[in-house]
Length: 397
Image (cartoon, rainbow, N blue to C red):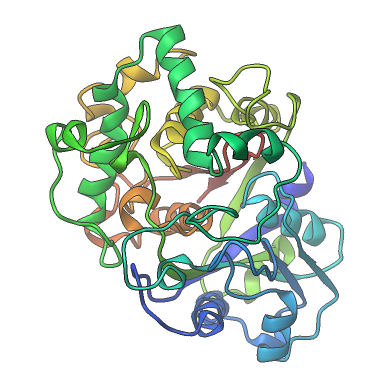
């Protein structure tokens, strides 16, 4: 029995989600937290831990809607353990932290949350850059590897991930029409999601006609800044009799990083840290990729989801292009691996990783409504991160 087997996900919650809600970000955060606590059948008196990413930050605008101190004070929580900080193995590393805290007796019920208000922070105009130094904002002094990228006008993850996608295209012959199926699939699924943001039908021709942002990535390969918050409760397995409904079991986690901790100097740009996290996850379980019924995989850019498909072994290395071609393999209706069933970040908003674990649990609990995968799915994977950041959880009903 691994430490994560001591933990379960007992409840999930989500605030309103929208392109620009112009609501106080802490209000959104608390909406999600209270909903998750109630979903688990708990009260605020039961919560004795908090785990969040990244904590309070002023840059980039809207990147966080509240930290540990904000939520603890607002909900009057008595905490035995808490964690909040920027450096994590992907955004879902916060949930892994909570699993470890529960396993080793530091807390019984940990509230994990992530909130953003990037849509409203950009104002009422078009999309602005979300990274420091972007969008014409002055007063930013580059440090670290950005000292080498900023002089070339490369401040954000879009050209960094494009570099990796370009390499995959070169190495394996991957084509734009294959990559584009991730975006088309996301749009189709978002139309079935009451909280979907972009729901108008989109064809592969629409995708190919969209403007190039950083070759080979197009407009529809990029996720949508939005406002919203998501929360999950990680509880100790011994508390199951006290919960409102049968919880979701944490079967295995992956957080490894063996390559260089760099966006542009990783030893294999086509794999990123997804490769290491996925290998660790499968080494901690007797289940295999063939057992997975639903995949919720980070699509801050569509190429990251493609990378996760290969890293997790749902297709061979370099074979994601043919696997995606035509879109049938990843469709909710009859696909061998329904992908990003809520519309992902490409069409349902950049909830920064947490939307994926929320959707994985929704599917395992059979609460997906019109987007529910048929056949009572029993195993799901939730993956987050890109570049040198990656974290994954294997969940079972």
